[in-house]
Image 1 (cartoon, rainbow, N blue to C red):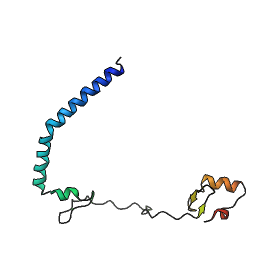
Image 2 (cartoon, rainbow, N blue to C red; image 1 turned 135 degrees about the vertical axis):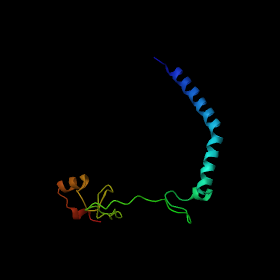
Image 3 (tube, one colour; image 1 turned 60 degrees about the vertical axis):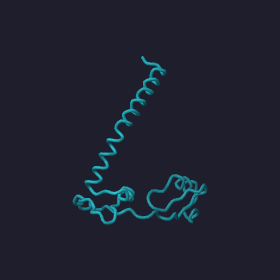
Image 4 (spheres, one colour; image 1 turned 60 degrees about the horizontal axis):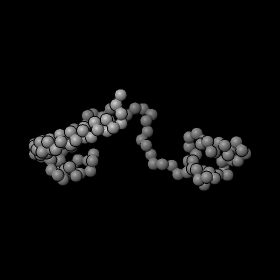
Length: 117
């Protein structure tokens, strides 16, 4: 069974090996990237473009045909404004199940109207 000192020594050796491999392969990787950039006409400006957006003037990658939307699915909407606020700052829009904090207060004899915003 290995002890902590042996494991730390192995980690050190592996990190040194990884660093050497990275140094050795760095220039080759840069050359590969530059060759691909040249083949596809990619510029540094293209690389700086916002992720997910195509740079102006460049053709967008072809997207596969979109599957028809499943019936009953709705587009996500903006958050709903809270209609009720609890004594500790909890908020509830009035939609969906009543939250535990509101259920407890209603069980104690309060009404939802007591906490309306």
